[in-house]
Image (cartoon, rainbow, N blue to C red):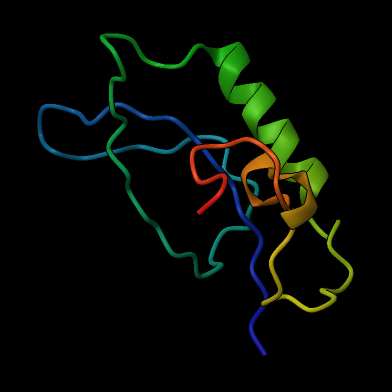
Length: 95
C-alpha cells in the first residue's frame, strides 16, 4: 500500500516556462509527484494569505473526524423542513 506525505507551495512560472519549488520537506533522491494547478482570480481578487491559512487549518482539523457513517443513504433533517410537515405552511400545503 502506498502512503503519501503532501507539501503545498506557491510558485510563479518563470519566463522560460519552468517552476522552482524551494524548501521542500523531502530528502534528496526521494521520488515525488508534482501536480500544478493554476491559481484562479475570483471576483477580481485572489484569496489573501490569511484566508488560505484559515481554509487549510479547517481542512486539517476535519481530517479523520468522521469515524463511521450510520445509514449513509438515508435522508437527513427531514423533520426540519416546514414544507414537509403535515398540514403546515409552505407552498405545497393542502396538496
